[in-house]
Length: 320
Ligand code: ACO
Image (cartoon, rainbow, N blue to C red; front, side, top):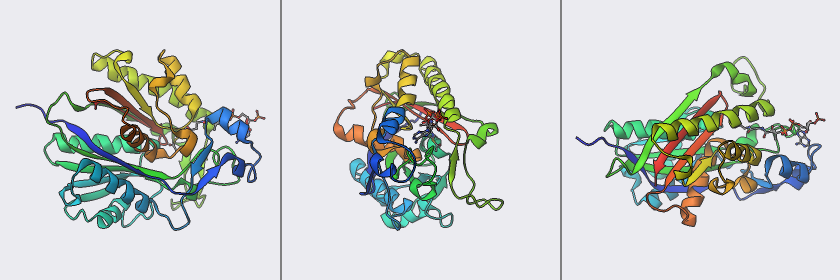
């Protein structure tokens, strides 16, 4: 019997309307538009309204992905929602999305692995499909990071934004077309470099805290390692990968990864200049924009790579 694999059948995304430009942040902390652009590549980001929730953005992105896939919500077996900024812990945001979409048959839960969350959710959805336990799964990455930002901390408030991205994963008709492999891991011993203690019983610091330089060093080491492991295991040359869709944290991280792998930065699509770092949402938003712009051709090879708090990291090799 031929082994089952999964494939992305449709994509969607949702971004808040409110645009926050670097020059507006100049009024909040001691920084400048020029510094932010030079050190991060970010020009502006989207900020959700006070009452615009993670689950609402996730539901809009999910609906668009279902429309793109031409799959009715009732056909969904699971909704997996990656976020570290849920609207509520109970009910979970995936259940809120279920109600909004009318996906009555779906099993729904959230996954928290910060900026690797979407990749971990995708890996889990792939495993469900390959095991025959599911046919259609909505995988969402959604964040409302502006709500946990300390707007007095110039080391973090310049970086993040809000948004949601989603894919519908379904059974592929061929094992060489669709999701081919994953490489992922975690290292809890370095958890302190990116933290949000606000919701824990022991602490009431409700802001995201980060050691930017440590995260930077971790990312430029770990992402090339994952990419090399995936390509080697699948007997592919780095040049045979058409696009590398990396978590949109910082343009300098993407440039360093491209340089370490001796690849042109043209293979690394980017939208962080408009949206900043939207954590679990960044890869599915980018995937949706690339797909809708028509740059992906059938059979092209893509690698998606996420990295972040935990520490966590995850990459996926797929044939479009
Ligand atoms: N504006 C102006 N100056 C600043 C700012 C700012 N916003 N932030 C820091 N500086 C200053 C520092 O105080 C320092 O000044 P000093 O030399 O007088 O001490 C100087 O700029 C250089 O500081 P660095 O920390 O070395 O700046 P760096 O070039 O590393 O850039 C940044 C900082 C942008 C945070 C970078 O380290 C980074 O992007 N790291 C990765 C962060 C990341 O990707 N995090 C998300 C992970 S995803 C997740 O899971 C949530």
